[in-house]
Length: 74
Image (spheres, rainbow, N blue to C red):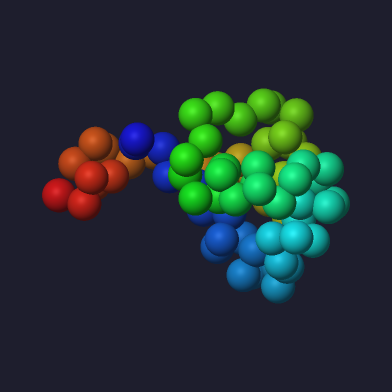
């Protein structure tokens, strides 16, 4: 998929755990892991907004578009 998720980068910058982020956003750690690992097929704007609020960032800090070739590693 050409959309990459960079939640790990923001978690490291904020020195925050996945569990803490999930608690503060109000989603399960399992659902956050699905999103974080790029396996989610969709994300609600409300969830994206909550992630940005907690991490004090913009949506573009969490989501990045790549060409199909770059996403496939080629």
